[in-house]
Length: 127
Image 1 (cartoon, rainbow, N blue to C red):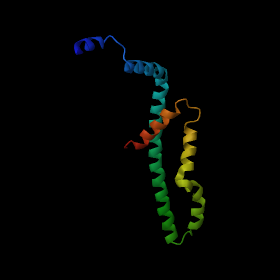
Image 2: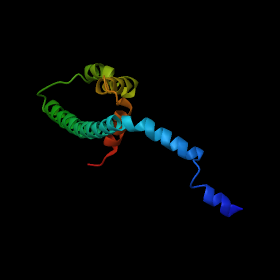
Image 3: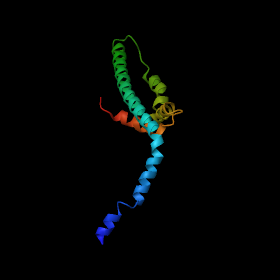
Image 4: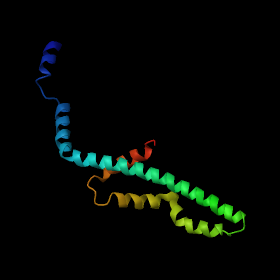
């Protein structure tokens, strides 16, 4: 009984085969755009990560330089004003900056979803 069932299986189309074929047919035209979006997202994510490191390094060196000049009484820094000026950038834990960056990077892209996935992968890459 099981032998007859096993011999019939290769000749019959199962629901899983139908679903797989339907998904394959549906995704095939989208693969170039999805692939391009993923690759571009990874590249931009990696670049943003590297630029972020340089920005943080620059800010750290700027802070050290300003503090050195302040300790030598060359300049006086109003840190309350600096904090006030930085508030719009830091509001909502940077969510506004991330939203704006995301909107700019995915504008008019048909592959925005795969780009965002690639961007997150690029941000996680070591390097």
